[in-house]
Image: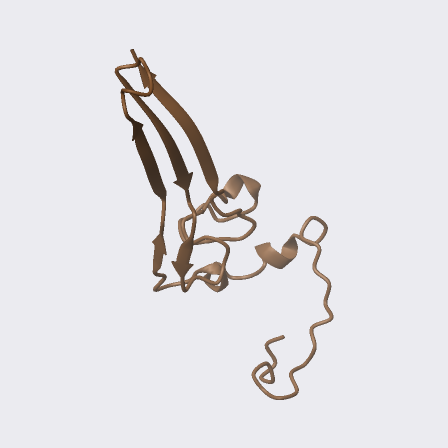
Length: 120
């Protein structure tokens, strides 16, 4: 609670229960300035692929390879939310619909693909 004691040794405990689906006024009555973060920096490993070309003497194919592709493996950031790049909240669902405002959004999912490529 912002009562001047939040950074003290004895802060006031917050016992107010907020259920957004029932009390959506909690978000709509607050200034959007409270949801905006500035000076956000991040480093993300977006995509990486490792490929091994199988020598032709093992297969009758002209070229063959095995590969592994990974997406969104890690992120280093000073952002306090889940992911600084997401902003899927629009005015249609009760949000402001602007870049930089984040509540209720999920981070980018991690993905791993393994494959085998053969050319004849």
